[in-house]
Image (cartoon, rainbow, N blue to C red; front, side, top):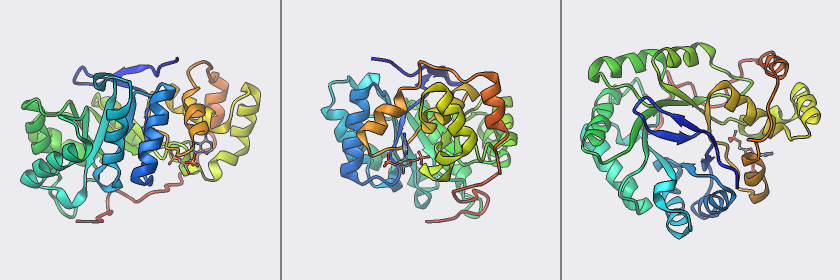
Length: 278
Ligand code: A2P
């Protein structure tokens, strides 16, 4: 069985570069998809409190033959729980739902600049990590100014920043900033949410040339760009397909052709203004 390459984060922890995302899956679907993914060789699952499926993911881990310490599990602090004490409570609630003693990565889901609680939420994550209660700590959807503030406050850099990235929205400046800080980037909605990107003509041509699907070409692009990537699927065949990407390589010409298709199309909310649940 093939395995995803490992990336070493700035805290020394290793994370499988490709994992399963479970956004928008019901608890039951998240259970089934996580179980299928573990059987297919995935060792990394990414959920969040707001997805409402932490229990399903936890159940799949508990029922799997794969030992807990071989699975990298991520969950995220929801916006409504930001603040020092409420973050600590939310972390405990997530652990309870998942039936786990700790997760490998805990992320602040959104910066919510208007609430101005991300600095105290980050201090809570730093405390949890110092106490050995969580593996790695990081953030999602942080812009450079949010990253600079929490690093300035605590001296602790997030292990990674999970942001919207796909070939139509590459976030070049933010990725470069993260790289300059030693912060890895993790792509959400890596397949463009399964939309029109999968019919893009350049990608179709590259896929035909390699005898692969467009989704596999896009995932290779993320891997070769250096991102950690968490494609979502509720379909067992596509879960297997999305993991069969470690035995071919895009050429420099392919990568250049993909770089040329970007139209800067953001699919999700803008982190500078998004304040759901604040
Ligand atoms: P499905 O669950 O039916 O497989 P993203 O990770 O960018 O948010 O994309 C997820 C979307 O892409 C889901 O709608 C998922 O549908 C679809 N998807 C996932 N993998 C593939 C694939 N290999 N081919 C086509 N669509 C895919």
